[in-house]
Length: 119
Image (cartoon, rainbow, N blue to C red; front, top):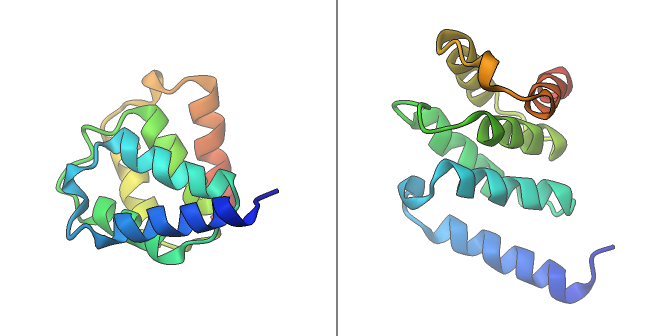
């Protein structure tokens, strides 16, 4: 159960991420850890999820996103109930086109397929 100080911290941290003009300074793991934390803690911050999803969707390439980052991001966005079809399409295309499924461990696979079934 979240108590008041944690809720205030999550709100402040999310707002700080939103204050960045561009999320290019965030490595893929930092992006995935951030949205995973909000989804896991069940803390809504729709603008944060939208900004991360938009940033990833607008990225030229997802080469730097390893299977765990991909799985965590799509899982977190699906868990949070954020609808961002462009992000899910871009991630799916990247996974298939890069022929990287052999790098996904069982947890990455199950989290990713669950996210696509839920989103």
